[in-house]
Image (cartoon, rainbow, N blue to C red; front, side, top):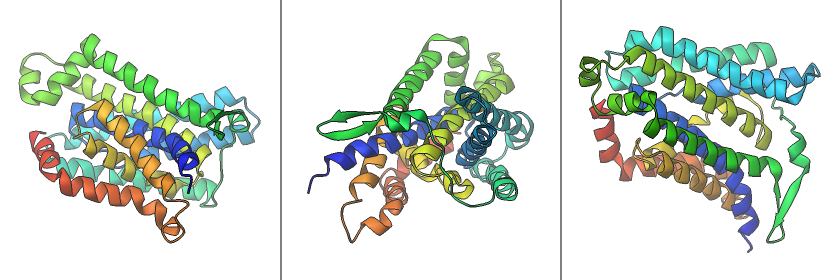
Length: 288
């Protein structure tokens, strides 16, 4: 059995999981919030892009609209609602993000329905042959975008005042406030950044798999698996874990008796990650 085509195919989905996992880790490190609404933010943006294309708008306008909408939703929640829960337990803050996720799922269902769709990008028709396997430009873009955005965020954390403030918050929130770190500003910036990540992740997954509100909202599960494997701290380990989760899901496709259940792979990986790294994850959560 030649699994190489499935490995290469899984790189595209894995890149989306990598983007999503990194988006979750950035927010968690700065605010202590594990955002279960991440996929819903991206799903709403992807639906807006689909609608813009249906209205014959240029592709770049649709993409900008999608990222702007997901970022705006994330900003509003981070600026208005998240501060109300900032002094509550970590679990309460995480569960609080289920509310916008459910609201967005309902809104998408009312506006667009639950009929699965797909975004179509011109890059879907272009490809490179690698070891006689076709890799579409869309998947290549997903991989390069993941690397580029993780690299950019690493530079931001290491080379800017905002990054310094985020790292300070990750270490000790109360001491950071005493030292003059702008808590609300820094946390809002983290919500904006995670909104950008969710926008791109939603667009790519809507093209590579399907556009459906509930389905894209569940994108958060493999992203959480990647984030836990990165111990909710390391961006690059999280990104690599996301790639591996995507590949693991793809290589199960040719196995006849497992293939119908391959969509459960990210859930199983998340369960195994929590079991194996549970102590580390709990420590990270307690630190918040």
